[in-house]
Image (cartoon, rainbow, N blue to C red; front, side, top):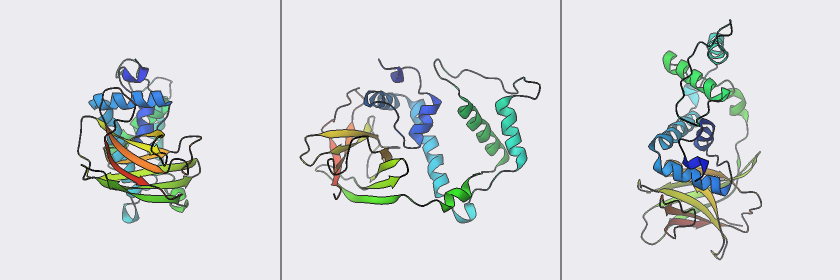
Length: 245
């Protein structure tokens, strides 16, 4: 049994998943999806963080986030580093076996507590983000329903500083006990590469795997996978589309 099947997912991994990242080897990714399919707690944490991320990205105009006062950061530092005499001002309570708490996780928890308590939101780098160029769309295509499916959607391949990413958005997918997986197929449909599961059953943003070119794998497929531990394609596809090459 993989370590990702035991206990709960690490906070760092949950954070990366909520941002659309899929760290680890293919076997580790498959173990992560199996765990999320069976663990209400971890899947809820991923979805809650993903919802916050989407809301922050959509915030514009009058809702733009502002930098916090100096005393907010001072309070965060106090929570993270402890009191001036070296003693910690916050008791650490273990959440579950093997569940590690990093400085980043502690800082995030402290910030969330301050934001909720004070009713304020902030973004220290909002000005830099507002002037950063939008990722360039390299290719896009519609995802058409396959026989027996009423779902539809679209896919875009965008160029980023860290490499190309595949962004998928599907509507009409019903909540299921399993999960929806995104695949890249070659033109003949004989070779395929798993990208990852849709976030919240409808959206996903995935890094293009190393050594995989869109020209060789132009077909995007979304399948319904059962939570049975089998990482192979279920042969139950809902939508499919072909990127122009």
